[in-house]
Length: 430
Image 1 (cartoon, rainbow, N blue to C red):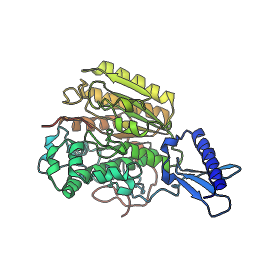
Image 2 (cartoon, rainbow, N blue to C red; image 1 turned 90 degrees about the vertical axis):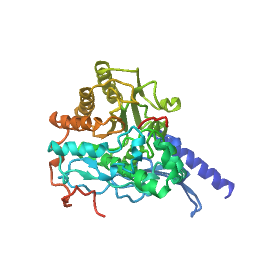
Image 3 (cartoon, helix red, strand yellow; image 1 turned 135 degrees about the vertical axis):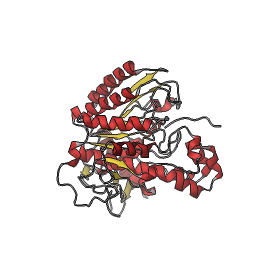
Image 4 (cartoon, helix red, strand yellow; image 1 turned 30 degrees about the vertical axis):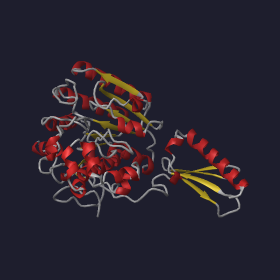
């Protein structure tokens, strides 16, 4: 390329980056695929694509900004996760494939790998939901995952040793990877798809709950703590790229463990405000990731209800007052429960129910959509507590009624579940 054309392109790129920075997008978010150089004319042009559904164009004399509102940018792939959901469905997302059962190997980790189905069972017992009233999750495809994950990382998951390390189930390393994919990773990919779907539902309905998900230790290029896919990051990135009016997100992470995965992903992204409240003494202790936390609340061993709930209310209100988001992602781990083998806190079942109510009420008072994921929780009784919390949110008028209003989609509700459209270890934590 001739020297003068190289200078023109360099100047355009600098101009375009300055324009992007003025809109709160950091150059660290830019990948090579985002930069297109058009040299078909005498004066080359630089196109930078895919920042909050925007394309910024520059030539030798001026900058243009085109915003793709209401439709994905040119670089967005086709996905089955943003299909229309019937208005008759409550925005509660689940699939029986969430549950991990494989020759008892799942019992080698203290995580209850069947808790998600138990939550649904309890909600049915209370006649809050039926099979036909909740949304069926879809598995996230490789193309969906590549929105955040590197190809190299996804290829590493094809090694059973890597999956055994991430899930902390050592015997998995002796199994053929096709079995590991089917019995372990597919359930996690389905939960990940559920989180992405619930993000869109939250914007459409005001709230949504994915009965699974909350894999907050996984970032774009690294898994850990039973977290193989970065579902929280994916849900936010999908919203930024595909949904009009969603340009700022707040993560309220109240799992007992630091959410180092999404923190690493959004380290230099001013569009995402992170509040994280966790036991300061336990896994992962990721000092580098802590730099991304805008409101950090570190707890001591054995913190009890009174102190805990006071801090939840003070800091969730403070976080939402500091920056008004377009969407809240609430990571509602139940490993804060008294007696949890990994969480190290002493919160009662009633305290967990009250905690969720505080967060949902803060979102409701501000009119901000909220997506809840269930994240960690390592005792058999956590499924009952999650169900009780959802029922309490309904009794308090914080979820439920609005999901059944309006004409909605013309899609049919099946007799099984609302369709999502056509077609010796050291354990850590979720």
